[in-house]
Length: 139
Image 1: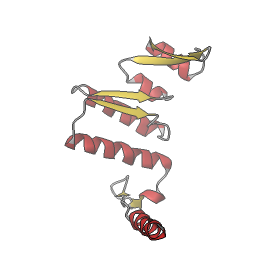
Image 2: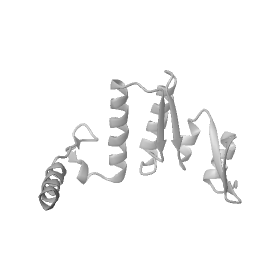
Image 3: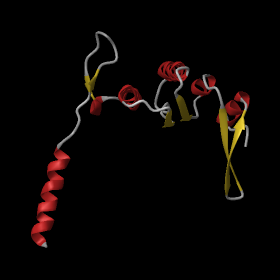
Image 4: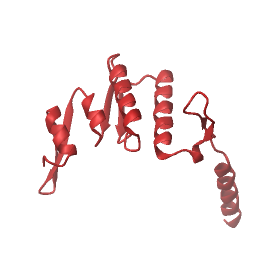
């Protein structure tokens, strides 16, 4: 039994050594960065790019992103939200949970999540109400 545990630990250590190195640059003349050197917003951009690259290999009709825009600055949040809007016109659906106005602006449908008396309700809402929810003025 002890030999099996030692063998298992060795295998786990070997597996931990394997990793994916990602290098990216964000400006034409800028330097390359390893993922570990990037800001949270840059890592988010890489995650989105990787997700959309995989999309080209294995087309799915529905994509679910949970606050993917949380670490993006205004410029990239706006850019990504318009990219999702463009891709959705080709039959893909993007379901994105967000607290960002830039992402809400480009949506086609909006849903609010409400909690009352230990129950959670999801309800279709208007764009104006989605903005109010983000500003905590609709509960």
